[in-house]
Length: 179
Image 1 (cartoon, helix red, strand yellow):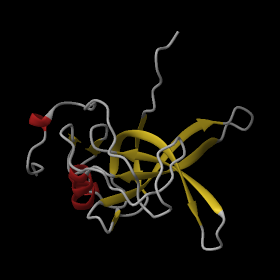
Image 2 (cartoon, one colour; image 1 turned 180 degrees about the vertical axis):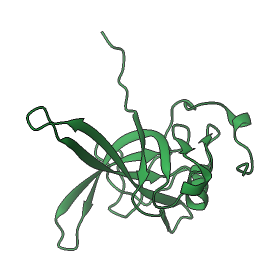
Image 3 (cartoon, rainbow, N blue to C red; image 1 turned 30 degrees about the vertical axis):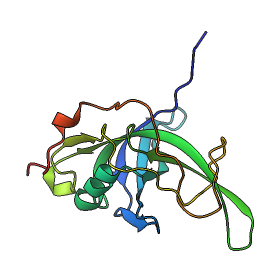
C-alpha cells in the first residue's frame, strides 16, 4: 500500500514561442512557456512514418528559474523541465467558468535544464533548480481546485513546499551561465 502520492511532470521539448512574463501587483512574477513534445512511429498498415505533437503550458513561479528562462530561452530552444501538474479555474469575459491545466515550477520543487547547442538558444546545457526558493507567495488568488483558495484574481496562492529535488544543490547554480 502506498503511503502518499506523487505529482511530478518531466518534459523534454522545444519552445513554440519566446517566453512570456507577467508581473503581479504584489511584486510576484510568472514566466509562461509553450513546450512541444513529439512522438513518431511507423504505421503498421501503410508503413508510413507518423508524428504527433503535444503542446504543454508551463508556468514558472520560481524567481531564479524565471530569470534564466527569460534571459536564455527563445522559440525553438530545447529544454528539460520538472514541475507539477496543476489545474486552475478562471472566468472568461462572459463569466463562464474555464479550466486550465499546466505544468507549474514553484520554489523548492522546480527544475529547468537548457539542452542543445549554443546556436539554438539552449545555452550549451546547464541545470538549474532553486532549492533555496527564489520567490514566495505570489498571491493574487486564483482557485486551483484542491482547496487552495483565494479570490478570482489572476495569479496563484501558495508558495509550494517539498524537497529541493532536481539535479544538485545550491553549489551547482552559478551566478552566470558559462558561455
